[in-house]
Image (cartoon, rainbow over all chains, first blue to last red; front, side, top):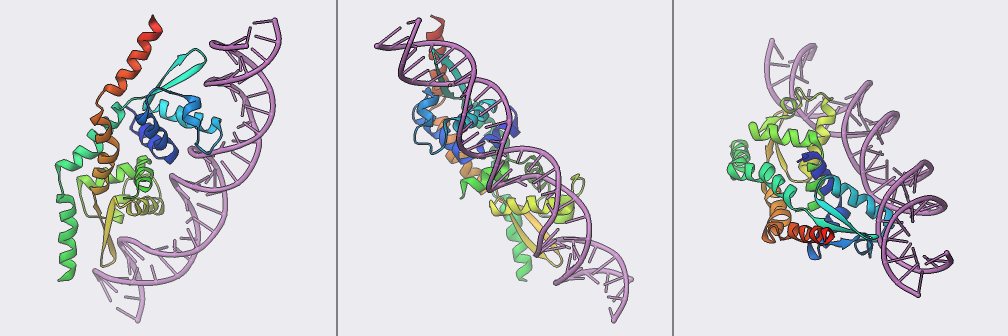
Length: 106
Length: 106
DNA sequence: CTTATATGCAGGTATTTACCTGCATGTAAA
DNA sequence: TTTACATGCAGGTAAATACCTGCATATAAG
């Protein structure tokens, strides 16, 4: 996985919306995904390309259509790297802050 | 939580590095965090401000120093919203793609 | 009080990004 | 084969972003 591509892909609200739409109905065509998006088709296409580069979306051509499928794997990898690690230390991280604040209060 | 601020904050490699450094040693000063960063102090400061705005980092002033602490809570919220949801559907999402590919092969 | 240190504030610039428009290509249907 | 439809390709622009430099302020130390 390329951390950077995944995080950058998730950094845009339109792309997160596209993932949500694919979650609701997987395998949609480009045209379907662009509907009601409030931007030109080409703009949405570029967002989908970024999602594809990050491996968050895979595509298959069926005739003249392009079908889009979510790939959840990179999300799990983000979890492993960026959430589980912090979970492990639990809230001890916040505890450090609390201790410092108490020191101030004295 | 503000989804957008958190994702945008995580989208930059320098900011992810800063979080890693704070994970290693919580409560560091601005000066400590800037060391060996290969950019001007002011640039790093701006990154830390973005992390603060996203609530991923909290700060306390101690005399003339500014101490930085990780706040892992927004990461857990990202997990809830963006990983657990997809985990729930498991790999059925990938299965959709596999089925489509098999259809092509026929 | 003077000096050194840690951080804050205010621009300025080059790159990246998120849009757009216009046209080309490939596939399906009439 | 002609027409309609879904997508691809190639720039072009405005705004956001990641840097920078220079100077101001506030605290600690001598």
